[in-house]
Length: 316
Ligand SMILES: [Zn+2]
Image 1: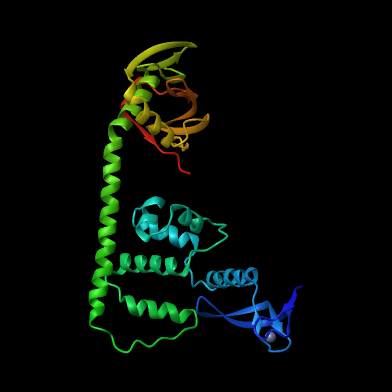
Image 2: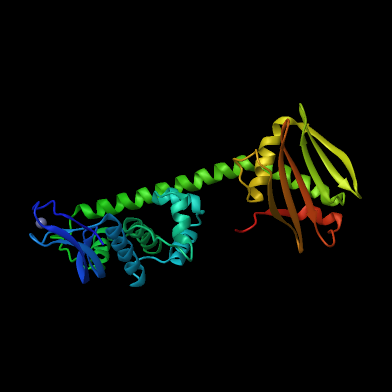
């Protein structure tokens, strides 16, 4: 309960009051708060609002949009993103939000839904993806009606087709750029990922139970543990260590940026029918990060199977 001198009239006292079905506007949209707490001056009747309380109303507003299905649900956002074939990161780039925001919106038990503007943009992307040309203004007017505002656009402006074209062109450009960036990234990773595959294939062929990557002063030493004995099997230029280690960490869902603290991860390695669990352990050492790969398999595939091996990133 609060009580203070009214700043409007300077005479009355503002007292806390609970109002049922309080009509207000949230971000300009009409909204009724079932039970609102406001401050009212006993002299001039001016209403006062606590920041904490208006923030709660805003949350209620967004919740009501979700409840009334006016907002895309987590699975809807995921569906749109997947239809475009974009990763969370690339979709975030496309619609101009952060990866973290998108991650939160796509969570089944999300606590905050997307903003209205992000919701509209994703809906627009979805519509343009499924229908091609979109009457953007018509679409936005309809969406606005859903939250209780009716707008009259005087005339279907001639410029609209121009706007549509622009929006769609921008969208296609962005998609193209994202796809190109992704290809470039995949290309840059190709030699490293092949090296990684060869290494594991070699280890499996040798029936090794462990692979160790140990950076020395000027070489990266690769050791296999075969029947409990560690063998030096490769000596590589030290320059291959950072990309190789990063690649392994990405595959194992580890934090690539952190090379200081020991990390644990897992990679699922597929060989036709055979699945091999690779437990990954990293630790920092004098000349760089050391990596230990523990290959776990009940029965190792026959050496010939090694030719068909593919590494797949473990799904989160
Ligand atoms: Zn007053």
